[in-house]
Amino acid sequence: MKKIFYVIIALLAAAASAQQFLPAHKLQYAEQAISKLYVDSVDQDKLVEEAIKGMLKSLDPHSSYSNAKETKDLNEPLEGSFSGIGISFNMSTDTLYIIETIGGGPSERVGILPGDRIIKVNDTVIAGVKMLNSDIMRRLRGPKGTDVDVTVLRYESGKPDTIDFRITRDDIPIFSVDAAYLVDPKVGYIRLNKFGGETHKEFAEAVKKLKKEGMKDLILDLSDNGGGYLKASVDILGELLPSGSVAVFTEGTNSPKYDYFAFPSDKNPLLADGKIVVMMNQFSASASEITAGAIQDWDRGVVVGRRSFGKGLVQRPVPFPDGSMMRLTVAHYYTPTGRDIQKPYVKGNADAYAHDIIDRFNSGELMHADSIKYIDSLKVNTLRLKRPIYGGGGISPDIFVGIDTTENTKYYRQVMAKGLINRYAIKTVDKDRKEILAKYPTDSDFVKGYSISDSQLQELYDIATAEGIEFNAEEANVSKPLFSMVLKGLIGRDIYESATYFKVYNERDPMFKKALEVIKSGEYSKILQSPK
Image (cartoon, rainbow, N blue to C red; front, side, top):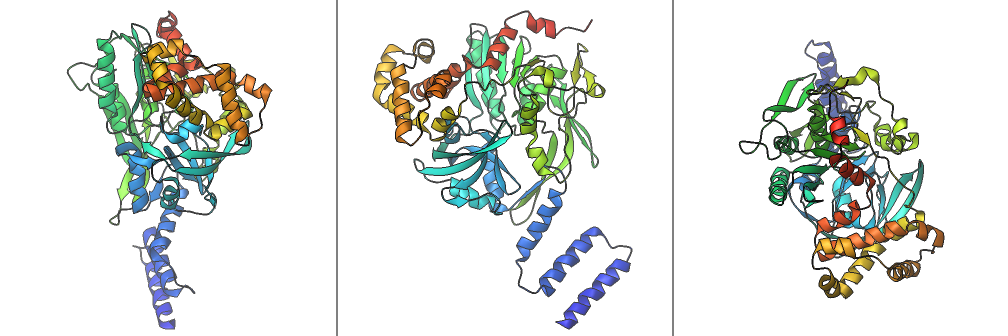
């Protein structure tokens, strides 16, 4: 043992005195010393993995490491399909942080939101215990139709609150287009939930279908869209921008500037003309920001909503022979005007980065336009009309629409969290499907004519009481429009199609209402004009 010790010390001393000694050698020798000299036996694979994670943790918030199983699982939301609860997530400080809920999936149905943190699955605490992603996924996934209980930590008004959810697992459809329909004879609406491998194809098919039905102008809904593949964004921009326009460029210390150009899939862009309004919010990230940023920079359309997330770091996959992978940040994304999409961050401080949305809420930025602070030094001009727009992280909208939380009471959240609205919707569909279809043959008839009665709401409240949720008449009355909207949307979705939910939702959504108002009025032209 002593002999081995002195041999290692001698090697280290010799290496230290050599000019060729590099930091990588130091790491290698440290691993050898621990494996040969440490008092207890060590798992060398785990030792190396933890070293890699430690290095990445000191960098930016998006560089990450995943073992072979985790790598396979993390690719599924963009490339395949699976059964589970329908979320995309990151691990932040040993806590599962939800990035987005998959449209139409089980988690969205019960009211789980981006930004929630799952801290317990059934009876197992998963937060703060250094559990592997694969172990967490194994607990969340399971056969279709089975239930899983999760406890979520949610921050509202800056205060933490825990909420218990019961989620019924289901097959998770991996489609990018949640809805595509005509709002009126000339205005179309397309909602994208991600930018995946088939997104451009789905988008192009939706545009062609709507154009055949008479669409001239488009509302593109990217709210809550956490992004995905860069190529999908650039391909979609090829159908919206003049052929050959710069869609985005990347640049880093060790990565020279690289321009991505937008070209149509055919000879001409599918939407070369007509108005475009993009909807986005604080959860719109990455490829969503690339898309909205290019449309804004080229004065091709108007952005409505709230400042986007600010995820503008380029990760390059670095695969290892054992199937594990390191996703290493190598560059920044810049919009065509040169705006850095990435919001500011402090290296090694992932907690502060994760709390950015909460900080925005507490500062009033998500509710009031006058709470937004623009930095004059980050002002640039658009490429065609020379309009002033601002950088500083994320894409700032041309027209601000704040969050309205007045109807979102604690009683409503408790009922949603138990999955009771979805359960009651299924019960209603099972009982009244034939009657509803006879009275409302199409989903358009349903959206216009169907309404939730007081007796239906009372049935829902009675179910909630039976489940142990204390009835609060005042809060139930405040949340009545929200209960009615969600219940109607879920019933419509289960009877007709997923788009029906968004047709119902958009009737009350302030952001959609503003987008429609802008695209149908002179306000659109006023925004897209050269400054005086």
